[in-house]
Image 1 (cartoon, rainbow, N blue to C red):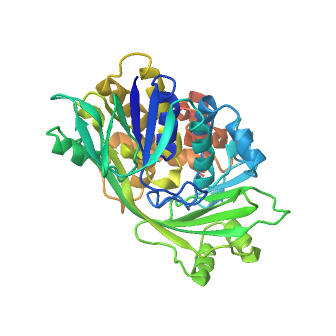
Image 2: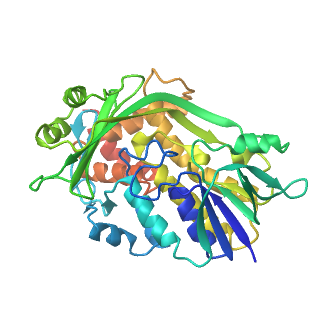
Image 3: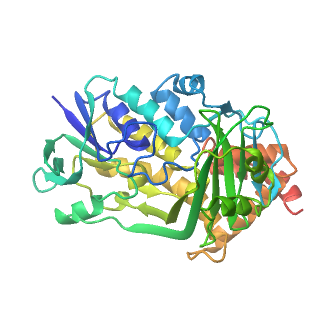
Length: 421
């Protein structure tokens, strides 16, 4: 009997358990938060705030769980096409509308996790236990043979750490005498405040995204299940939205686009504003160390990005797709982490390049990066006028197309022609 253990029952952990179920006889998911209902888990403090399942992630999700998007839609989650059904503002102006060929499902994170959890636990051999992991079991001088829990141990042939940004894996590795991974950081001091409102009929759109570029204030307002609006206000570099109701409403009116303020002016509040603070993006480079055999890491435990860009769930799904490919043979931890580093590098570049475009954010800005920043800015400005540029930009932002798509010759010509306005 082969046995795999997954630490964490978030998006990354549930997707990892799904692909492991195709190879291992038993898969045990270990989750410390005993809150299986449609409420945010304590271990996911951002769980009650705006989340975006990008089109790239939606496609991967349906590969692993065919029909799940239709299932979510049947339960009340709006299914929309970006740009046509939602409004996007960058540099204070709305992107031009065009068909994108993409589909988004608008849900709260607990609602999505509940659906994934229910589906994952239907696979033979998959189980969920609520417990706190405190370390790793050694297997020989250079391997891992399971996990240590607060009240026992769980032997395993493979351990996958999907415990999120607060992962303790580096300290566990150090305790066993292994190297810890180098870490990249870009601090932005982001603050969120989120409130739910009742959603009545007759609204002309399903969602609004107001970027913080080039200002420090932005936000999002999306229709979610239960006929509600989920409204998140965001501020960078310490300029955080207030959490008192009057202050929340007043702060929304300061955004460079009026749509969010217009929605909440007439909507009935269902909750008080709830805060969340994100210090900065962090990438643990497990690809640069020799990992013990039988141990892998995925999701935010590896690469945790500025949530403003909504890449986290999609990046986790991309890493899990690579895991599925590597399960076809013997799992080589170093080869796996080198493969996932490529998708992490792409997402990291998109997120941190946008953050480092603000001079107040500390970080290296090589000449090549500065040139790319200037070009991306031109693409964003051209997207106000040119529907084809807007479509290309949003497909890259949704991790549907590679970032190199923005360098296609016809797009460069359009961006340079319109991006100087």
